[in-house]
Image (cartoon, rainbow, N blue to C red; front, side, top):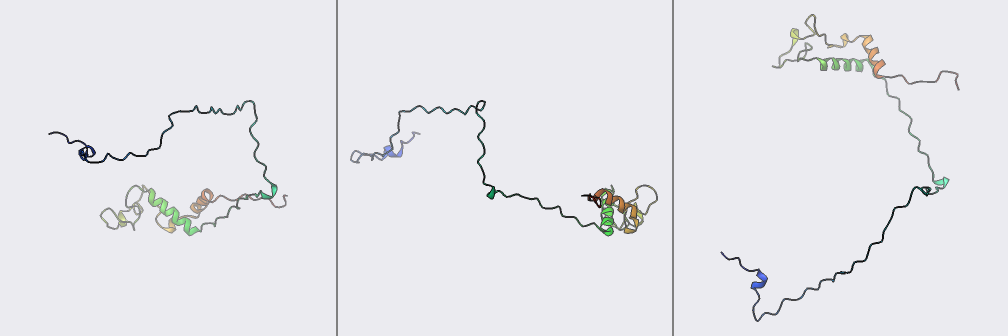
Length: 151
């Protein structure tokens, strides 16, 4: 099957006027050489000095003083210790109040209720004062203060 000629050529008849000429901007075909720009020789000249700033416009930014965090209560620390103990248990029955994979209460099948093996911390009564002190030593560093009477 023959390919039809382009639409513009097919529409020209002997009586039609020629298509109008498009006015395109003329391109400058003469190219001028570009100026050569060389980087400054830094080995012989010192770097430029920063601009002088009037002292009146200089402002000092003072960082804010650190805000003292509130000390965690014993109850908050006990909750954190219980949560950490439960999250470190590999099974799904660390405490009697947890549920097994089938959704049944663990009760006496829990690790807490069985003698020997893993001993999770399940209740507030299981958290000793020593555990709370140890947690504070690790997680609440004491701010250094100057001794009394020093300048």
